[in-house]
Image 1 (cartoon, one colour):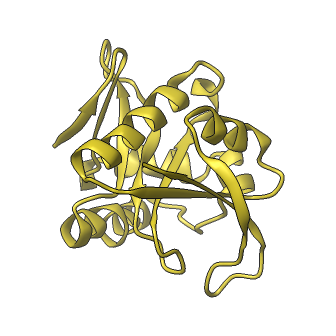
Image 2 (cartoon, rainbow, N blue to C red; image 1 turned 90 degrees about the vertical axis):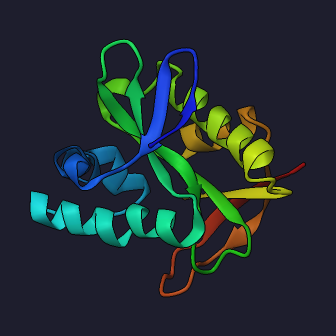
Length: 169
């Protein structure tokens, strides 16, 4: 299901058929460094990750991470969307892109569209984001779409202190 369309991109619900792409993304060095190693090493594990993560979140909350693809040729670039995360009171915006698609404005375009979707369609009054302390590129992108540093947080079952950014509408 298509959620948002921008000038260059389509954001749509992930499906089980996207397991091959998710396997590639979850094992991208940047994903592992800044988001974490999910231990997904096979397409079957990637399919289970999708079923128990984004697809389950669509069913339970009507939001989730969306697949970002090029409108022109259908290339799969990354994921971006809105997440209901344990340990955060507010809906969280998140994104991850394959290395070859970073630095070309795709993440900004997708994140800006996901933020507008949260505000205008889902009628959210506040959206937050979390990043590792050393993830300067994500912090800069979040600030570019209007989020501001608020505090440091530690999520349940984790020990790493993360930056919490937020925006209110």
